Image (tube, rainbow, N blue to C red; front, side, top):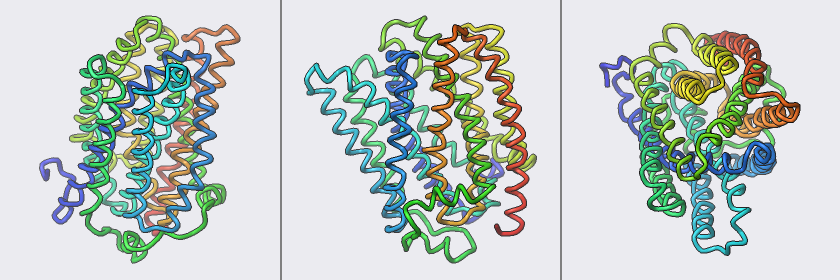
Length: 418
């Protein structure tokens, strides 16, 4: 691992456990991702805005409940609770899909889509909050890229299993496999070493409750320009992602009529994305963040999006879509996400779990709403995929400015011990 130039003596155990934890968490999710996306394609662009709305409302309801658990329990006790709630829900869905009456089938697809969309936000948000609380800012720049490799390997494993088994074993069995992997992630937290952070509060976080109010995540975000800046960065990212998701439903849906064929094709894209990502995370991510800084690393995603939407605006074909989707998602996993998580290493311990979770769930889905209903309105006005892509491209310029500003703020807060 030292050949990668990121891990120093004394960090091996924590880094390996973190990567293992992330492996199981993302393997669990990526078994479900292609199933969810196939359900989204089946629903069509006319229904997707309502699915995003349902997800947004659900996250708004869940956030204070989650914050209440965080306030009352030590970190290493509330993480298993959060994950096992999702395990229970997945088991219920697996049973209903397998044995439920046929009359329920029209409602299962949308409900499962909403559940997995929330799952995709809460599971990594809790993980990265734990990482920001464990590693100090200097370590995060070196190690978050390498830790992300564990998640990428998990994503590859989950996507590959789904692409190979979706047409053989069916959705309920895939859900059971996802549950087993998520429980493995829970077990990975049991032997995690103490925090590396110098301040006593952070080191003691594993032994005591985080404290604070159930609505601290919301109030702290609204009172902090830095956290609001992270919100704006997240909104720009999710609006673009949602536009691309709708275009996926149109372009892929037009090519593949069979649900299992769509699932296998989308799982194949996941496999390619994660394979490219792991190479960057192993050999590039840590060095890029350390050499060019957090701000310029955050700027990679706006630049990729500007080029991608402009290209899709000129050539709205499946081939161009696949290239854009693969490069954008690989860029997010390799550069955007690790750099964005570094931003949270310079906030108060309470904000690492409450404000971060609010941003990662409600603000994230708020961007989905803007993107979803905007796309629906533009489609209703008769605009084609290519035209909508050209309209989406200028948002990347705003996104780029926000990225650079956040990088400067992070550096200043680190120097002043925030």
